[in-house]
Length: 578
Image: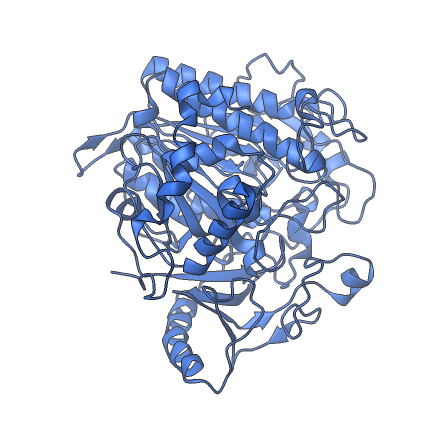
């Protein structure tokens, strides 16, 4: 019964599809399973922030969390985090693929602007960046580079994915230290041999997957998440001791196929290896939150958790997640590919048990972190992220649109509760005939097409509050359709007028880049134990539509029963939940 109630509540959260707000956070912890950021002083607001970390969860579906109705009980710490903070129900990534999303997060700019896109809509090359010879451009200003102006110490733990050649690596773009991999551990698109992906401490190679840092391909066993956890805990401790504000980007990839988990978590979930990995990541997040509390800096730390794209529904059995009630998954611009779980946690600042229906995007974290650090975003370029502090701290709603891109094509736009598709496409007939399906069991005639269908003159429009699964387009002849089209069209025109595409970085591939070129480029790199520190640290020189009258979630009391039980669990300590 409780599980069914949770699913019913999750559906009501989706149906509300609008916006609500709450007070925000001092220290920044971004849980993307990807990034972690920190803030210094919040000037002009009478607040002083000494630390910031940002944790970002890699490739997790909206429906993978218990707070969104998943009955498998794998995320008690994330559920507790939501009970103590703010849960976003309409939080979006900038792209349905990992690399472009990460670039957008760290630059505050759409991939079409920062160069992390392909000039073909399906972005085939973009999901195997270890084959791609491009990377983040020097002309782009990344969040850690800007935070240095406010005295921040910046660390990335985990997957970088913004270029593997030396000029593209993290220490050239504002990070002081790094422990992790330049890419994911997924093999090249057209090469069945699994590459030996290197793991680095700063600029020095310390091991390779399947060798020094092993992933058992049969059982999925690997202790890398625990290594990443220890790196985060040690960094937070060192910064607390030095009283220096910090930005931590924690980018875990355990839920990306091939999925892995530590031995003690294997076989402990109800969803196979993927559930085991989620359980271990949730455990790790609990450890980090508890560590912040023990050190007495949780009130000075904003922690933000989200994902860089929807769950991959094409993954091997027991290696894919859930996108809840939404259509399709990773690599598509339907809701399942781009709407993500998101939680903001800042004890003493964000009231417990808040649910926000603000339309938000991971690029907003760039602008919000700068605001917390007392910094203005760059004025010499278009920044797509907005400052979410009014949402987090004052419970306001901000009028804005969400744009859905795939490659260099704007596929759709969301305004309020409405989403207009100007192009629809799931994946090619070639891939589909090979058994690759981005929307398994979810075929919607005329919507989940295998040919790129153009709807520029008459976009397909859905009411996401009534139809979160994007199954029933509004009739072209209806007054509702005409009203929405008149509202959306000028927003799209204005957006396109601002576009100055960056130089595409994800078009050019090199099949042998991981097994030959990388070795030559970094032949000077030493091999050392993961416990030894590296030394090289090179650096480069208004109001939105409110909740509708018929909205079942029209008052704040809507979530109190849901969070009541969760708020009691922290008493025993986050790390004891598992």
